[in-house]
Length: 78
Image (cartoon, rainbow, N blue to C red):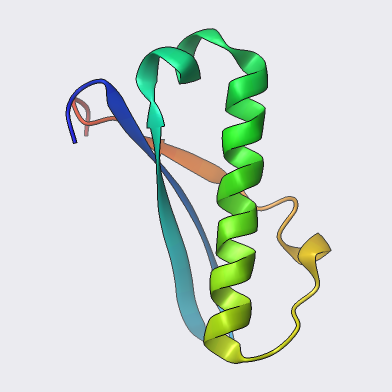
């Protein structure tokens, strides 16, 4: 991924194991559009919910994922 792409990370522990996802987003859109940021964060949480439900084979409550933090990983920063 180039410098114009950011990765959003969302993670949680399910059944004692770390579940996490990375979601690529356009840097310019992330930095200039609040609605796009909110949508990307919501999408990251939904993707994690789907991943965790598939991994556990259980119907996990979506509300448990709604408030999870979403971190931004910049390719040019530590």
